[in-house]
Amino acid sequence: MGTEQHAGAGPVPGASPAGAATMRAAVQHRYGPPSALVMAEVGLPLPGRGDVLVQVGATSVHPGDYFIMTGEPYVVRLAFGLRRPRHGIPGRDLAGVVAAVGKDVTALRPGDRVFGWSTTGTLAKYARVPADHLVPVPDNLSDVDAAAVPTSGMTALQALRDIANVRPGQTVLITGASGGVGSFAVQIAKAFGAEVTGVCGTRNVDLVRSLGADHVVDYTETDFTRTGKRYDVILDNVEAQPLAAVRQALTPTGTLIPNSGRGGRWLGPLGRIVKARVLSGFTRQHLKPFTSLGKRQDLLALADLLATGQVTPVIDRTYALDEAADALRHVATGHTRGKVVVIV
Image (tube, rainbow, N blue to C red; front, side, top):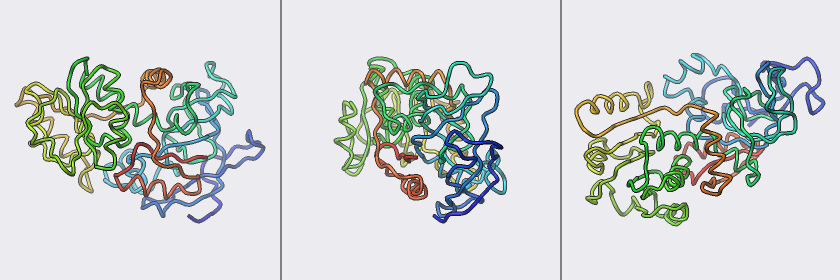
C-alpha cells in the first residue's frame, strides 16, 4: 500500500490524546480490491455528545468488510455510498482503550479497556464509537482476542439463540465450523446444551473438535446431506449445497439458517433469501435467513461467555495496520481458521 496525505476524515482543531491532530489509517477513496487501500495521515475524529474516542489496539476484519470495500454486490452501495465509500476508513470491530468521551457519556472514562463496533471505520489509530456500542473487555482477554468477537460473535449468538431458539438436547449442525462465525457458533451451541456437529475441511477437523463439537464431518470425504442424519438446527455458513439438498438433512420441523452472505454481483444473497422465505410458507420446516444487528446486550452476553471460558476466540492470523490490504485479501479466500486480526 502506498502512503499519502488525506485531510477528509474530520480533523480535530486541537491536539489529539497523542499530542497531534492527525492519525494513521488505512483509507480508500473508491470501491475496489484491497489494492485500493492506501496508508494515510487523516484528521483525528472528534467524539460527539454520546460518543467515545477509542485508541484502537486491534481490529478484526471479516467478509462483510471485504464486500463493503469492493462495493460488490452492488446492493451494498445503497447503504454505504453509491459512487464511493461514505466512510473512507474500512473496518467495524475493535478493542482498545478509551482516550476521550463525549459530554453525555457517564458509564465510560479515559483509560477503560473496551471492545465493540463502529460504523465509521476501525482500521486506524483512533475510532469514534457510540458509547452504547462498547462494553468492558473481560480481564482474561487480550485486545487481539476481544477485537475478534463483536460481529462474528453476535451473528452466531443471534442465529442460535434468537432465530433457532437452540435448547438443551437439540442436534445442531454448523457448516464452516472452523471459520469466523462457525468457530463461535460451535462453542455457543455447546454452551446452550446442544449436541453439535461441525462441518469443515480435513486440516480443521482437530480444531473443530477442540472447540467442543461432538461430531465432525470432513466435507472432502462425506456429504452431510447424504448421511441420513437429521438435525434440529442447521446454521449454513457456507451454502455450498443447494437449498433442497440441505433441507434433506433437516428434521421435519427443523430450522435452517442460510448465512454465507455470498451471491450474485448485483443483489448478493437476496435471491436465495427470497427463495427461502417463499419456501417457508409451504413446509413445516423453518427456513430463516437473517441479518445480524449490533446490540450492546448481546455483546455483554458474549462477554460473560468469554469471561467464564465457555467461548474462546480462534485467531487465524494477525497483521500490522500497514498490512491491512493483506488481511482483507486473506479474508476474501473464504478459508480462514477463526478470525483475522489487525494489530494497530
